[in-house]
Amino acid sequence: MRVAVVGHVEWVDFVPVARYPVPGQVVHAERAFSRAGGAGSVVAAVLADLGAEVDFFCALGRDPHGEAAAAELSERGVSMHVAWREEPTRRAVTLLDPGERTIVTIGERLQPLGGDPLDWDRLSRADGVYFTAGDAAALVHARAARVLTASPRGRAALDGDGPTLDALIFSADDRDESAWAEKVRARARLLVATEGEHGGRWWGESSGRWSAVAAPGPPRDTYGCGDSFAAGFTYGLAAGRSLPDAARIGAERGAYALTRVGAP
Image (tube, helix red, strand yellow):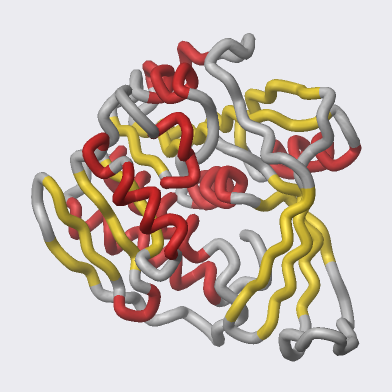
């Protein structure tokens, strides 16, 4: 099965800490590590773990961080379609305290544009596409797939008129995502809202709920849990599964992400 991602990448410095510092406090970290992160990277990696053939359309700065991100994702089995930019790759610093993550992004988000000379025709042969960043023309390319899901982080591309989404996936606990989902809800056949340990619900052309899945190990942090759910849900729809089955796959991937430190 072929599933594509049209989205963004951040090169992330992950710093596990025992507790989140209060203003003015100094805390000590035993270690730190860096890897590709951001919604596009997480979804692409999870889809590859699920066994899909993954095409990832993104934009990266032609710098050490961009090159490292492309190499890392390629090693994970993701086919990279990169629009190389002169601007720097966006970076982030993520503090991972028990059960949570706190993110500071650095620089502008780079996104693929429909006019970039990428192999967009591959999307017409995809079973599904997940869209998290790009312009309106990139979204039109993505709609050529049989199934199109998206995150409200796609923002400008989702505003106004344009292709219909099969599902808009967002966190009910994220006020920014929820506000954007409400703004563009007319573009989506289904709204799919995750509710953490309470599972989540979908509504639109049909409605229903799913239950959370128990984590298969001790919880570590929440980085990538929502994006992992989106990957599993998109995978399920692309495979022709029912909505409850797609939600179950998403919930399983989200629960698994909870037991991992940082991005998958």
